[in-house]
Image (cartoon, rainbow, N blue to C red; front, side):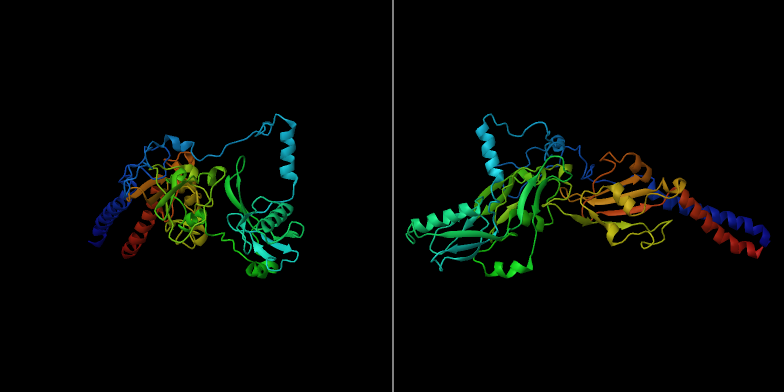
Length: 422
């Protein structure tokens, strides 16, 4: 009787396990729901309708057609055989040589030494103010930005004479630079990351005491760019050509697109109580998805690869460095970082990657599913290989071949004890 019941029990066990496998495979058969019918990160979209808390005379998001996003904020390219500025007269070229061949001009934050003959009350170390001015005792602010040491000396002499503090024959001033401050410059053209960069970062210990004792201060981190960076950076739908600065009820519109294009940027120094408003276009602009001074350098993505062939996150190399990705990373790069790609082609090519992301415009969660083979062969398509945003969640699921193999192993483990009873 026992030998007759064993085949029936085995058949029932196989049927039950088959139904269980069918249920577990249901997650990968249909595509996950996408409440907004589009994914935040796709280039060719019509945009989202956006509204503002207070009606404004200017409509910031009037253009919800994202077709213009393909060319907005892109850097221009220049040819080496074409001059940027054509000079018709030789005098123009001579003037250019004089500008670039003279000594290095002063910039905000430079530490200078001012020596005045018989003027101990005015002499000392000074720091050029953020607006490029120099404030001496009993004198109005002097504009020194762009001036050489010799020219700055002459300007201080003239200010002392005009104020009636010195006679023209007795005014002797010497201005020398003790330390050059970091400067902001814009770079465009054939570079990997065009835009606004900061150079000459230095903290020489030999001059720290001199800067502390010097008159004046350079608040290098009280700028509009620093405020945007402190807010974790702008989103890809930001309208950078109409950033609004509100101060004492007055509004000032600023074009910050030069941070990406390499054009000159007006970076305003901020004071307590200032309010910064970054409007949205309602459109995803892929040109803004890269590291810059006003975007994140990197962000965190939550990953899971607790499947075969990886048995845990440690062996899957899913840790701090694989989940902290540089800004501008796409789904395929994150899948490779999570060890979801590679290995045996028969079992790993059909694997699936599921991405869950929050749409900041609609406030809804978006979920998309892509196969590894689909990602690899269509990596150039942003609708299949979208950009990742901070705090996205990514999970890797095994292929049907691997699931069938594991099912066979589980079935063997269940039947083996039964065979021992035969």
